[in-house]
Each structure stands twice: as structure tokens, then as C-alpha cells.
Amino acid sequence: MSNASKIDANAACEIFEEISKKLDKLTANSIESAQIDLSAIETLTGKLEDTIEEVRRPAKVEHQHRHTFDIGSSKVFISLIIMVLVILGLSYVVAEQRRKISQYTNNDLKYRYIKMQGQTSEENLYRLERQFRYGDSIRIIRNQVEKYEELVKEQAKRIERA
Image (cartoon, rainbow, N blue to C red):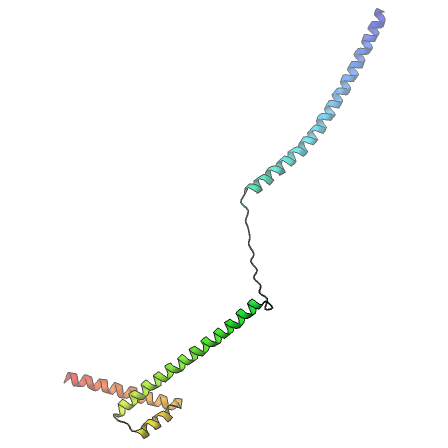
């Protein structure tokens, strides 16, 4: 029995050694496969950290405003009509003011012309009114009045000196 025990013990040792070698191989394979899995986990962890950083950073928010109006809408159509009427009304007012200012300028020139002549009659006033219908006549009258006023100023200076 002791020989049988020795053989069995040697066989058991050999079996244990084979098991140990196979376990070492399995452990090495499992460690390699575990490293592959760990590398995948490390990659995913890096991506997760990048995503967390992006979330923490303030994001640039772009606002795009698009304004549209539809003439078919009654409010828009009425608003457009009112704006056009206001613009036309204001244009009329400006044209009337320009006409009045032009009339005042012409009246001033007429007054200065009559003052230059010293006196006037009804016939001279009608003739002056007719002359103001033509641009060339107005220019000639303006030049005459300006020359007369310059001469009056020079004469006033001479009188002051004397």
C-alpha cells in the first residue's frame, strides 16, 4: 500500500503540476483579456471626462431672429396703409412749407426793390408781380437790389467819415 500511495502521490503531484500550469495559462490569458477590457474602459473613461468638461463649459448661444410679416394679416395691412398715408401727409406739409418760405423770400426781395425805387404805384406793383413769374427776372432784380444796398452802405460809411 505504501507503493500504491507513493504512485498515487506522484501521480497526484503531476496532476497538481499540470493543473497549476493550466491555471497559470488561464490566469495569463484572463489577465490579457482583462487588460483589453481595461483599455476599453480607460478609453470610455477619457471620453466621459471630455464630455463632462464640455458640459461644464459655458456654451455659446446663437440667437437667430427672423422677422416676417404677411400682408394678408389685417393688422399689418392696416399698419402699412396708415404709414403710407402719414408719409404722404408729411410730404404735403413739407412741400407747403417750402412754398411759403419761397414766397417769403420773394416778398422780401420785392420789398427791398420797392424800397430801392423810393416809391411805387399800382402799375409798378403789377409789373413787379409779373416779373417774379420768371427766374431770369428775379435774378436781375436781386442783382440790382444787392448793388444798390452796397452803394448805400458805402455812402453811409463816407458820411460817417465826413
